[in-house]
Image 1 (tube, rainbow, N blue to C red):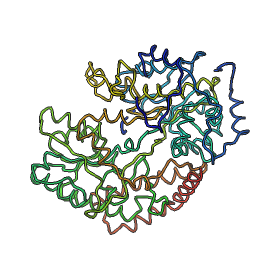
Image 2 (image 1 turned 90 degrees about the vertical axis):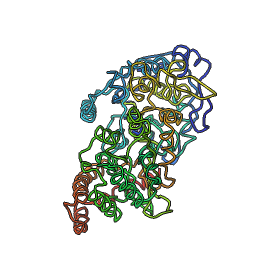
Image 3 (image 1 turned 120 degrees about the horizontal axis):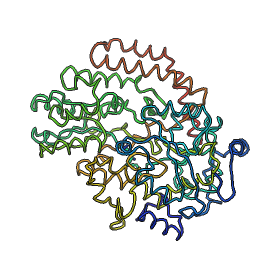
Image 4 (image 1 turned 60 degrees about the vertical axis):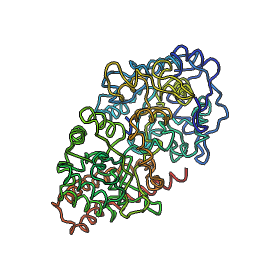
Amino acid sequence: MRRNLKKPVALLTAALTAASLLAGCGGSSEEGAGADAGTQVNEMDTAGAAAETPADSAETVETAGAEAGTYPLAEGGTLTYWLQLNPNVSANFTNLGDTELGKAWQEQTGVTIQFQHPAAGQEKEQFNLIVADGSLPDIMEWQWVKNYPGGPEKAIKDGVIIPLNDIFKEYCPNITKYLAENPDIDKMIKTDDGNYFAFPFIRGEDKLCYTVGGFVRQDWLEELGMEVPTTVDEWHDVLTAFKEEKGAEAPLCFDWTNFKDSNPIAFAFKVGTANGTQFILDDQGKVAFAPAQEGYKDYLMTLNQWYNEGLLDRDIATLNGDQVTAKMTSGKAGASVGWAASRMQLFMTSAQQSDPGYELVATPTPTTEKGAVPEYGYVENQFPDVSAAITTSCKNVELAAKFLDYGYSEAGHNMFNFGIEGVSYEMKNGKAEYSDIVINNPDGWPLAQSLAKYIRANYNGPFVQDLNYLEQYLQLPAVKECPSVWAVPDARKHTVPNITPTQEESKELATITNELGTYVSEMSLKFIFGTESFDNWDKYIETLQGMKLDRALEIENAALERYNAR
């Protein structure tokens, strides 16, 4: 398979041939979480190593000392691995080890894995209980930046996970090489103190980061003689025509809970956000709070106007995904916001069963002026804060490291992205192509579930996601265009990276942002529905200030400075 030079390079020897034969050769939600060769590292050893060998934050990991490994590992062994079970997996399996991917992962590495999964909806609670108990599994997959108070450096100092600088150098040639060739990614998986903390999930190419955007009924546009909207005013004209000419009762329909901050209209006013935050980087590169910007008022005033004119779904505050699907596929709505595959493609394949002429088209991020170039847009971080860390309870650190490093090898890359050669994919013209058993699941499973039986590319894991996966997952021609249509070249300049407040800052920031978020959510809907007058906007801003917004910004900007200095 021809690979980009910046992707993991094959570091496996001829012994890998045997591994691939054992596994049948070869070896993500879209869009959206013992001793080896006589060497033992116990809890006391790893804690001491963290204190005695501080990392140099100005240097990336070096390749010296890390030699090419062979898989399956001759020494073998057993590890425990705690991670959330993705819904596309849990729909048909109770344990990742029961999937073809789970089996292949163990077979190809030669390591037996006892997968442990928290109950759905109780992930944070069970994570906290395990950490508090201190009896940890060998490997834990988690959002260490956002969901561990104080971030991964605090997790290291708390004795929960181990720093990986020396581990990478000694045992992990594949991740080491990848980070050396990708310094921007290298920066993302270090702490402010320069410690590598986990084996990350990485979106391998920029196109994989443009996963959310707007789309409208193309067939309706053609009937009405209208073009795809590129400005806010054109959106208004299109929605009005959908209402008046096509009888749409909810011309623009999306679930506010998921997309209140990440819809294209918000980005048109330079207040849209991604990655689950309400903070943005302003034109000076400083962290700003989007709901306190003047553009946020303009954004809400626009939605208020559309709501009053019957262009915005009257039920927007309470809609869920199934309700949006029902309206979009029945002609009650003509425009929406969401993910390319699990929304836009789903709507088209569902609606076309009864209406073959049903067509959707992706819409570019709009601007407020005709001909202007969008400056803000939806883009996810290449490291979306999902990674597998080795805990201080692991008595076989070398084995765990080599096991996880497999995901960044050529064979591991193919396994996580495409599955098992000869079963879930075939190589054609130097490129992996999913087989019919995946694309047309014999049990009638949806494509996302069918993929999740063999791969993790349609959600996450310790590997680099391949664009080829997405190009096949997006099956319809109109949907394949989404990443290109939704891309905004300057979007990343305004997107906050995975910065890490200190433990003390984290506690204070969490209190402030929770209060801010609750108030903003309440007031935003009041402004949209007209139950709160825009004459009270200044009072709204004063209230945000009274909730210590300035202190939150101080913390965020201090963390950003530390991140930039890594």
